[in-house]
Length: 602
Image (tube, rainbow, N blue to C red; front, side, top):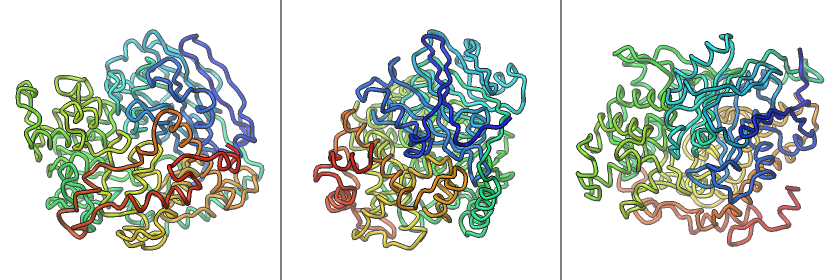
């Protein structure tokens, strides 16, 4: 059985009414937003009020494939989860790989939209056209691995794929993740907590349909060309397959923007003990692993000396539980990563929130009695990162406050300045003082601090597509806009951001056109990305996210980097932000004018 790539369906499931409906998605809307992040965000914005409470019945949760998801397009296995995020209050769209998204597409659905709220734990079973809402009471309280195994057992097909939440999502941890294939995560902005609020434990899907094209031979020719480019590239063909994302540890540390001890420093003296190279040298790494249709294979399959195994850690995770917490114990870092996958936690926010506790405690702002005889949260403590990860997921003791995220946690002690966040979301593993363009991306990201909405580390540190000086301000705003718009296209096409190390806008246009028969120009393709970015911005403004929130913690604006190659640097946001608003075509105070709305036909 086949389904045309242009015949796209939305599966609407109302958990309150126990109602399931299949709807057709207008092709003109697909041409404007592609799929994934773009199309799902458009549907979400049209159906959900910006002032909705993230945990209310009125909030909706969309699992969205990109237009090329489930095809042989290189890395065509990505899917997005769209909702209003409880951590930030922004429109949330979290990206995941693995095999779940592709399986969902092969079942015939571009988007699954969850609305309403169940009065008891349930899961959704999808077997091509057969869709059921099933009781999940026996799974409530269980981790993602147990849940995945039991859902597969009950489903009776080992080829099915599962996406689910763990205890963190059930307990409404504001940075709870959705985990698919046991080791892949839609990690950021708290999408797992929204799923938990709806009493939805998971989705299991088996798809047996093939995706059909008007001209399959043409599409396959283009796919082969792009795969060849990716395999010949130094990053996508060599660095990432060999060391995974942790190839970055030494690179970022050597460039002086490797955040250490809650971003107090820019270098970590023990980086060699926790790097991607160390994972290989200690023989913890067993093999690399690829997501669906991926020629890169950056995933890590790891076994520790005690026999525990799993995927990861990725660069961000290794840093969050490592340097950011001052921990140099690779085994403990990897165990914390395994725990996050099983409990359903965003590793970046978990590690960073623990790091904020460590700094507060070190400076005397958290009294010992608040610990209630639990592990002391000292920088460098392997025990602390394990203890507080579990405490957060189950909201035990101090973990109940930590589960609200580092901003709300540090604010509760009167010191929000120790929360390294933008729009209340924890900043990833690059100190903004070390790269001015990346700092601007953090400040302006539509989902709170984010490195994968416009990865300026690529030109500023890695020199791709060209090397930019890290501290130079001129032209950075234009670069940030281009990277943000291009990333929106990649997310909406259903491809992995890592392809952008070797591919450019022309390549994505060719893939999209060859698959669909569209006749997009590169300019029109980039305009799709700009349309998506502005759509998200407008929703956030209506949701109460102000232009004044396009900022960074004072540490980065006022306190010069104390060490390393970037010593003395601060972020010059006062100069970067006005230029960014200008190149975006926004007002001087950061609003989207009506002429821009009309120009982009939002």
